[in-house]
Length: 99
Image (cartoon, rainbow, N blue to C red; front, top):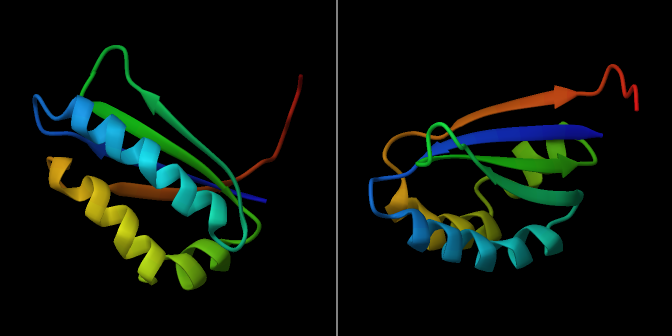
């Protein structure tokens, strides 16, 4: 399983709009092939910074099947107007789950 971590900086004053859009987008991710979990976290120290934590079966499920697809475009239409800049994305794999 791959964990995608997307860091998104939101324009000042657009937090409520982003949170409403990303809540609506959750259904898009739930229906996406290979997507197993979707979570959004907001920074306490930097309240305009959000992290999407998305679990995918494989890297390709995200990078080939989802990115650029119509569902991806639908997700972006819901939230991209809130972005202050480019989204930073990285993919991780678990090496330890201690407890």
